Image (cartoon, rainbow, N blue to C red; front, side, top):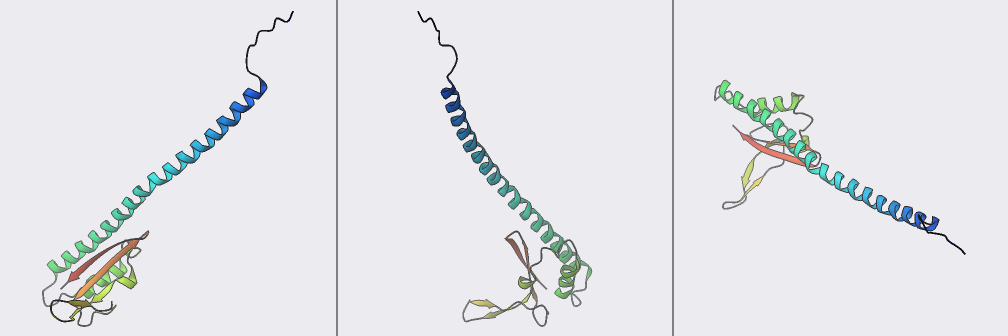
Length: 144
């Protein structure tokens, strides 16, 4: 007479549970990794925007200071451009190809076209400043 009572799992059942558990574990790790990487991107964009706005605020503050402390007939945007070019906190963000003096010419009626960006002021009394970092940009126009 055979009196065996079945207690526990067979080796095959244990192996199958390990394989299924491993597959589910790999899927879970991939899901969590992708989700965590996607969650970081908005924070990086926010930090970039904060850096650009802080740099533009520094430029705007200098512009206001120059306006207040310079006589009207002595003020020119070349002073602000020099500040932008030499300030070590701002210069890493300045896009030199998109920052400079511009002017607008009428192309008929109410339509105006911006000139090419020039590094020398000449008769242009508009300074276009473009700051860039990590594919984001922030532009502002300063006038005399």
